[in-house]
Length: 445
Image (tube, rainbow, N blue to C red; front, side):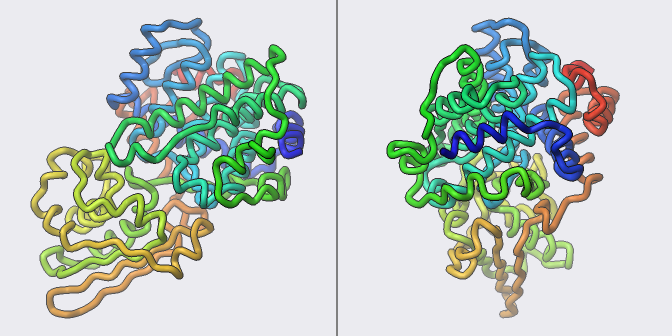
């Protein structure tokens, strides 16, 4: 059974088992997660979530990061998972179409802090969560992604795996935890039609529900033992086509965390390839007023999700490829301040957006999700046609952002909430995470 095979891996994984590069990548993921949590904690959805948690109360077991408040382990994971996903700068794993850090590290951090565990134990839990959550997502993509937000759904399995490893669950307990995690795994794409805050809730609930499944399992609460491959299990229910073998192929040998991508633009990842190309043309001297028409050729899911020609809120703009491309061409950058109410009304951006269309290319679609490529064609008013092509957006392993770039990203995000001394101390402690005896020091610097 898949749950047994995955549970055996989760329970048996120790820090000493981790390849050096996998452990190092986990630290990069933690740094990126912490910056995203801190940066996002200022935003309204995070403040709302923290307010609800504050009103309900809870034993001070783990930190709601950015609020400098402690609450129960499940509620801390909820707040941090919500905060992490708001700014659209959290990490991504492309073949699973999943943002793993928001649900998985939020669960791992809350569970490890509540138990006073070390950096090594925290790292191990993070890797366990990434390996299990990503593999389950790979087994049901891309058909699952049509209706389901993988970060919320498969993130629940990943959060449970991380929490189970950190809690020291046995194999049978972990099977039960995965079974109950699967029955809580949810998250629908309908929020896009309203620009709703629901998207941010998905990873928070995934983190919370994964921990809940583990806490219940520790007390003997049973769960479905064939939650993935069963006749009425997750694969059949949530995907038109599933590939169960992907859940365990190479498990413990091939580390999915090494395929992680990191975002450098605060917008939906499906926009990033085209933004890279637009910035390249802008830096080469392309003038927006010389453009007659822009066509972005991409894969089908990107066309469906980010073709919005008329975003009405900053959040919707993050899911509008015309807005992101137009903003990049006009300002030669795409940063947090690119997504404001004022920029939404910018007449130059609006005019250029009206000349931009998003089309599906069957050849590009066939490469997805192993690759997230796109092609940008710009027709100029003098009749010339400029063509640019991207196979891997900046931040993919094949086109990586440097460690220094990611450290600067962390500092930029964290400094929205913490003073510079605190930001520097936190960055250093993550860099030396394997030497930390109690990870609570990361959140109380």
